[in-house]
Each structure stands twice: as C-alpha cells, then as structure tokens.
Image (cartoon, rainbow over all chains, first blue to last red; front, top):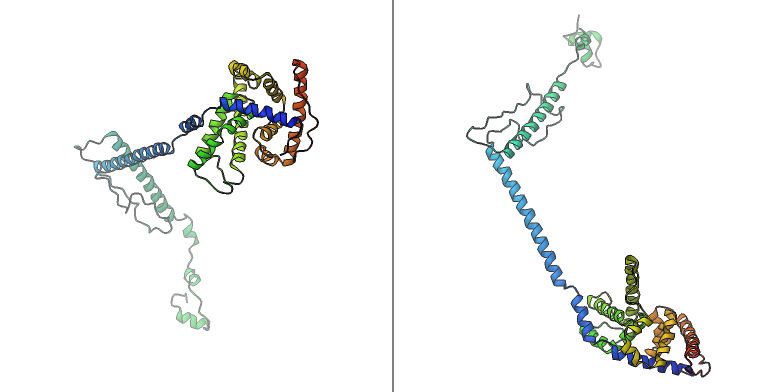
Length: 187
Length: 192
C-alpha cells in the first residue's frame, strides 16, 4: 500500500505507538500459562461425572437388593397364605368365558403360627394382599351371580308348542308324513 | 500456513510470534485499556486451547486471530457493561484516556505529540480507529482489514478514509489547543 503525504506521518505515529505497546506487552508465556490454568481439565470433569454415575448406580442397586430381600422375608413370615386360584396376581377372566362354578372361589387363609411374630411392615403387606384378594373374590362372585340370573317372568314365556317352534321344519314332506315322523307333535 | 489445519503446539509457536501484534490489536479493541487487553488476550488463548476458536486455514493466521480478538473484545465489553448496569456503580476501570492517567510513569515517557495522537485516536469511532490501526499499525491491506473487521472491502475503505479525515481534523484541533504544529502535506489520495 503506497502511503503519501500525511499518511506517512500517521504511520510514523502508529509505529511509535507500536514500539510503546511492545514495551508494555506482557510475556506470551505468562498469558498462555494463565489461560491454561483457567482451562478446566477434561479428565477431571470426566472423573467426577464417572464417580457420580457409579455412586448413583450403587445406590439404585442396593435399594433394589434391599427391596427384594424385604419381599422374600415377608413371604417367609406368612407361609400359610394360599389361594385356590392358580396365581394370586392373575386377573379374573371375563364372566362370559369363565366356567360357572357352583360356588365362588374361596380364599383359604390359614392363620399364621403364633410363634412367628411378623413385624409391622409384614403385617401391612399381608393386610394389603388380603384386601386385594377380597376385592377379586367379590368381583368373581358378582360375575357368577350375573351369569346365572333369570328373569322372574321367564315362566310366562313358556308354551306347549315350544317343541314345534323350536324344532326344524323338514322340506319335501307332506303334513301327514311329517306327523308320522315327528313323534312329539300333538295328534 | 494457508488452507491447512495446524496442531496446538505449532499454533502456540505461531501465536508467540504474533503476540506483540495481538496485544497491540487487543489494546486498540479495548480502547487502550491495558488490563482489559490482557484479559481479552487470555480469553482468546483459552478459546483456542478449548477448541472454541479453531483455525481452519481459510485465511491467514493473523487475520483469523485478529478477528477472534475483536469478537472477544466486543463480548467482554458487553459483559462489563452488563456488570456495571447490575451493580449501578461508578466504573473503577475507566477506559480510554483515563487508563493513561492511571499509568503516570508510562504516560510521562510518551512524547506530547504521541499523547495528542492517542487522544485523537480515542475520539475516533471504533470502526475508523480499527481500520487505521490495522492498516498503519499492523501493515495489513484493506482486504485483510475488512476480513478482520467482518465487513466488505468497500466498507473498510470508507472507514479508513473517514478515519484519516477525522484524525486530521482532530489533530488540527489539538494543534490549536496546545500550539503544537501538525503539518499537513496535502491530500493523500486513493489507497491502492
């Protein structure tokens, strides 16, 4: 870039300024080191996140183990609790598809032995399970009663000609022949 | 150097070579506030170390570095303004000429003409000051200056011409105020 006239003087002033700046400029290495010092170490960040993740995993795992052990202990505390149904948690089938039992499914609850003293948690768990079973039995009973229900006026709908009305007509036969073939028809 | 990626150790060596010029440019972007310029330069190096500012070889390293410094200085200035607004306090590190007052020993060393020149520079709009700095201080071409400033070459040329004009007017005013001669040697004309 060609400089003419007072541009050269401006440049001279800038040069002077540059020299003054160079005298007061900080050392590169000091600025660079400060920048490096303020830089967060990626490995440290990674280690911290890994430690947090591991701790969380251990906590969750131990909570699961404790929960499963508590469940097993409560099962052992109530060994007599049994039902006639296949599984306690299975949902009842819809009433139409279910075979009609003569009496609803009964749950036999054996009294726990006196020597086994269940703690408060076990008792709560047992009470909750018992409540669930009662509710399920009530549903089954209701379904059975609905499926076996009959109208009180159903007998009024019956007539002596029910057999004729319910039997199938036979084609290519005369009425007299039909009478011979149909033994139940009134003569 | 052009059109290639360079690793951090190589980049560090290149940055060291450009450190003086980078500091001068940071000073210009920070209105001659030395502490702020150092902070900006440190932030720029941190950005490079963290990979937030990455040299892709699309322009010369100097142009790229200066553009990063300019952007960082603007960001830092905004942050400081926000901080000042939040605290609603009188800024303790005033920019510009007051920074020279804060450094009496350094100011004393400077010639009177140089002080006048710096005062005149301070009065210029930032873009014009930056255009003049890049051309006269860093010996960059107008195209390179435009790249650093993030403007078109036409715009950079306009800032440059206006900057020169304003600087002349400002220096003439200083001459009248202080009785120091500032020789005008005609219209410089176009810059090639």
